[in-house]
Length: 80
Image (cartoon, rainbow, N blue to C red; front, side):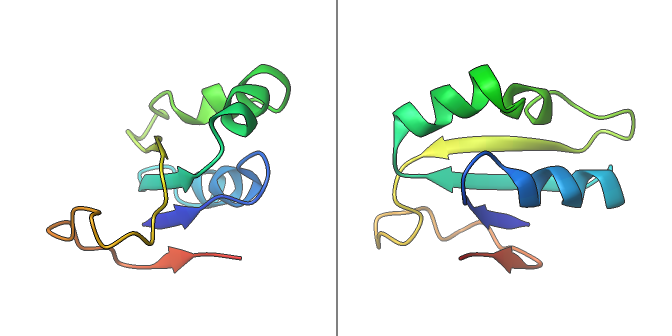
């Protein structure tokens, strides 16, 4: 599942609560925002595997750039 971040990963947290085996890839273009979300909003917790093996993999980059690896396919996406 692909997530393009909005703030501190609220949608990723909800997805992992509902589907704890889900593998998420999330993008945020601003590295400082990711650091602050890890420090203050618990984003780092989402990067650890859940009891069912799901987790969030954070990418600091522009998810919509043509240079992104398009060999990976996603069952869904969440963008705002």
